[in-house]
Image (tube, rainbow, N blue to C red):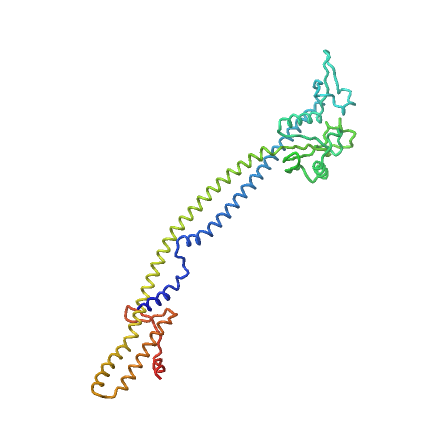
Amino acid sequence: MKILSKKSKKVSGKGFSAFPKSPLKLTLIFSLPFALIFISLLTALILWEKKSREHELVTELNETARAYFEQILITRLWNANHGGVYVEVTNKTQPNPYLRDDPERDIVTIDGRKYTKINPAYMTRQISEIAYQKGKYKFHITSLKPVNPANKADGWETRQLSLFKEGKKEEAYEVVTDNRGTRFRYMAPLLMEAACFKCHEKSGYKLGDVRGGISVDIPMEVRMSAQLAQTKRSLIAFVVIGTTALISIVIITWIFSRRIIISVEREMENERLKTAIQLAGAAAHELRQPMTAIIGFAELLRDKVSKGEHVKQELDIIVQQCYKMDEIIRRMLSITKYKTKAYSEDTEIFDLEIPPDKTDSKQE
């Protein structure tokens, strides 16, 4: 019976032998793909959030720079339409040397106070210096043919002015990092208008020509620090939510894994019991016939021996049935298939598939 139990376990448990018996192992198997997918999605979301904030910052700076440009453009137009404005001469505001040919550049009041004309270019430079001192932004009026050498375009401005002149761009912007830090650079063209000919009539421009441009530099350190702080807060929130979600997934998976393992173990136990019963039934069914024959002929043999009769035929039959029992046991020990046959109306037993002539060949 010990042998039968061992063999039945092997056959009945074959379908479940690779199934994990530890809830932890099963939890890892189930939750690991979800965790990898979740982490991948979370990483993609964080990268998208970072990229989105960078794009929003650039868009915001572009709109701000465009507003600055429009404002300075309107201010310059107001100045040009009035033919320039007069301000009192001070140490910081000296007469513009590039307006020396203008007879109305300097005036003196009755009480002896001196005033000088501020044209749009001079006004733009002074506004730029005030804005730069406050750390807000910096204007630079420039041209490929500057009247004032201080307005000479740098490399980036030269490239943009060339594109403006060719009509390939209406505005330009870019994030630049150099020895002055990280800055947002914006530039738009200045078109030749009627009020501009007074200062630029010798430059050969026509009405509507691109005669230069105004670039706007906006420092980005403060804004980038604020964006970084906001990104960190979002990252912390994502990590907290993600960690909570992963822990929840693991806990729920562990609970279900434990229930599944308990259910599988019960099913395996039922299969073992069913197999043991079927194997025991098969053994009883197959062994009962030769055992009955052996007992019957052994009793007959005992009677004949007591009477002194020949017993060779009976001994042959007993040996034959012993061989048959040995064959049944051998087949039980070499079971590799789970095959049953009907034993009664509601009972099935193992089919040991013993050929009817096997014992005869053994005996011979």
